[in-house]
Image (cartoon, rainbow, N blue to C red; front, side, top):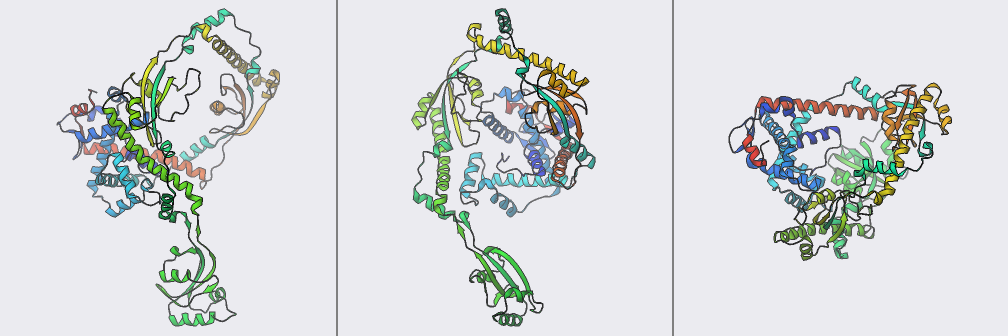
Length: 635
């Protein structure tokens, strides 16, 4: 559908609607059973819900789009067999069936939305705002082209989504979590525990004697896989990013000034004035009031506070001109000098007298203050256009054949050769290969590629560019002989010895603490006892490791426990000395957070049942032959 163009609503209801409408999985399949609804018919239709058919071509297009999105996310090609094994086609079909069922329900109920409401929602979408902060038609068209949508198709999809959201809201908007559930969740989330504890580290393990040659050989032989040299690959990489390209684009001062003038409203804080007005229904009363105000000993504030002026007075406070609803009053208020009173004004709601107090002048961020920011924004906008153009050029060149290095050179893109990289992105010296884009899943893509073959471009994680790669050669993984890795083997052996000793020491210390105290047990092994007064389940304090939290909250009051710390070379021995469940104010932020979370779970369950019942009542049929024809398989 809309593929994340819109920002999801931040509350639980918005997240629920986004999740259920845009990503519906096989809810009905799980409830009614796959075998009950998968049965064949026809050849041009993949599935049917009630009177709504999902055609072969529509499903093929959606499946192709889904695969392309997934490939961009994982950063590597996905074989058709793997996609089928993961059940991606079943998930997509379940989503389309659920959406079709909702659409059928919408038609049955006769729901629709005014065109202007749909248009307004699109115009207000932050994704379509340009540099001025307003709806930008060119940006709107560019995004739709990128997504492969026509304007009519996008508007229709947006309308469908809004209607589907209304159905979901009608089911879930008034849900409230039961108080007993809120209380139970509060106990789990906000319970506080006090404890005494000690931390055991490598220094408590004592001296570890050097291993004998026989011990090292035996240790190595049992763990050879840990010391193997990984497979390394030599690869050419071409990165085309908006950010790096923008740094090469020069923006003239003239263009920056034009952009500043075009977006001037973005940098202006409008003038504000302190306005006090009195509205009279009778002009004669207003004229009499004006005469009194002309007397030197009568102030506007005093007159407005007097009981006999026959007008309706309002102190509007500090306002901008745009905030004054009556144009005549606005014009007069912003023409007056500070601390002055107007003549009679023919306003919309009567005859008006206004007084202007203090004035805060318009504040404009000077051009020099925003020039660098604007220059950067303009360069990024131009870079985005160039990225698309260069992408198309390189892809066209690839169609003619040649190595990635040769083709990149033709279109003027730099090529970087990485002589050796392993699956974790490290060089043979163990350090990460530098200056590679983050989040592109490049490493897994490189190791899933064939040597010397063309690979699909990887979309950068921020969506602002592409990366191409070509594997030149591979150095297979090999077994390193003991002499090559002896130092690493000895280090690993010693670490294991320390870990084993600390685990046993933690058990012995816990046993002693059960009959004495944590303090005495700590003294016996020469460590300092520590304590925490209010430890929460979801966060740690001081040097207390997060990995030990579960053990603490699974131990009853006055109980003794042990837990591994941040590594095998750290152990914690503790006694729970207190358990406190704070009372929950129903009006607090915590109570609202808990209530909203539980309401979300309840809402998901209700919507799942609704969709399952809807599909069951409408009837669902699936053409297995057509489905397998699209995805190329038999499952």
